[in-house]
Amino acid sequence: MSIQPTVFAVTVAVSAAAIMPATCLAAEDDREVQQISFVDDHHVLYRAGTERLLHPATVNPTNPVIREDRAWEMAIGWTSIYRNPDTGKYQLWYQAYGGGRDPRKSHKCVVAYAVSDDGITFTKPVLGIHDYRPRREPWVEDIKDTNIILIGGGGYGDRYCNSVLVDHRETDLAKKYKMLYYDFSKDETGREIPGWHAAFSPDGVHWHKHAKAPLNKTSYGGRGLQPPLADEDPYSERWDSRKNFLRKNWPYPYTMSDAVDVFGDPQREVYAVYGKSWINGPDGGLAWKHAMARSESRDFLTWSKPETVCSPDDLDPPNTEFHTAPVFFYKGVYFSLNQILSARAEAVGAKADAMHIELMTSRDGLRWDRPFRKTPFIDGQQQAFSNGGIFTNSTPIFLADEIRFYYGGYNSGATGGGPRLTDASQQSGVGFASIKLDRFAGIRPVALSAESTLKRPLEYIGQITLKPMSLNGHKNLFINGDGSEGSIRVEVLNDEGYRMRDFTKLDAIPLQADSLRHRVTWKQRSLAELPPGEYMLRIHLDRAEVFSLTLEK
Picture 1: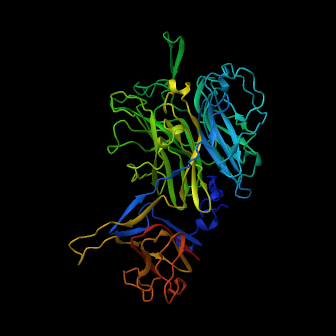
Picture 2 (picture 1 turned 180 degrees about the horizontal axis):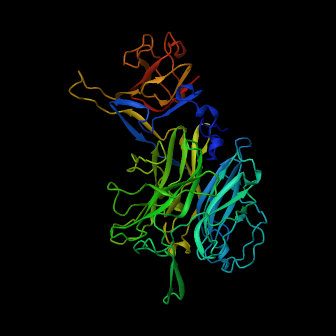
Picture 3 (picture 1 turned 30 degrees about the horizontal axis):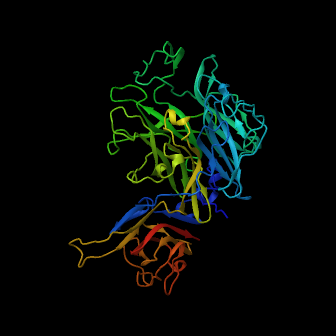
């Protein structure tokens, strides 16, 4: 059974028009459903005697749910997943890297496809769309039928990444499924350029690449070089005599890099992409560290100039950088499952070879908060198949009582592979981690409040006072919280801070269980009986924790 969150039409990020019901375009006090997440203090006037606690996602113990058991699956990376709300069936697209097993450059890094009825047991259908011709043991015979649905262009570098979006408002059914990926193509001048490419499909299986390619220019190579002068051609090439190879550089400053994640931004009503963006080093040299950048489009083909929106800072260890930072929008909050890339060793020049997922939040998609950087939201080190690289996406799956986050992973180094990519210890696949519905982070009382202004110390007692809001027409109030070791009570104050008679803490029926949907009630009166006006809700916590609040008309 699945649910459809108010501002998230289905279980995958889709176009803005599709994920934004008409009620969400109305003024705040006219909404049929008002939802407040306590992952941040956006709706909080102040809190007393409380702390916010991240609830890391729990990895599925049976991971990986997809394993590398095909010739083209030496390493599995980026994924996108969609759950059909009508049938409950899952579609999953994943990047499969086969190295040089098939000598054709177009088949070095492909997009493969899997399906499932429950999101746990997946099958790889034989589709007969692309073949595979391996020339390395143990695969030495041509494979005519595969689950490969997209191959590369065979240019200078590899086709890379695959971000799939299901657009339910698209009138051209041949473009209902949209994909962005990275590859090399020739522009109108005939020069090969790295950048984003688009593909479209009516069913997620049969894809056609759009003729316009690349859709933008992205940086490739040039590490350590100073940015090109404004009046010179950024492109350069030189012969590498050591490797007998023509080395090419496209050092475009402040462009996106080789992997992106796309979703429908309901606040701006655009397609939005978040992905890698190189920032310059201490000496001004290019390609020092990856940061997080954003670009947007109204037609999926013309994209804005990328804007750097978040980067490693003084609070991060020196060897920290971002990998990619996929974003999804849920109940008024932009969430990012940022891939934090670092070196296991602190030695000078140690290569980045470890990753974990940090949960970041934003209210506008541009200014990002990182309150949970000390604790991984998903720790790739917990399971062998993902302890070298963990690749999240912008398509979480929302079920009735949980949220699942699927990801690809492998245990060789997150950048560059290395010998572990091909030896017998290599593990790779797709797994998922989950949380209870909406329980990204909760607010709970601190163990002891003993300020001098208190008449007596308080143990595990706290309160959250929300900003004034209109309660006009709202009949029901629900709390997602855990009061199993104590209680949760809600009282109502007017916008000047006076308590409303019959809606005080003493009038509130205590919530003393763990529930995703406690119904808030009072002894004598109901929420609908409040006179029109602005009110402040105050949540009293006694050895309890709250995660979200929902008002319904």
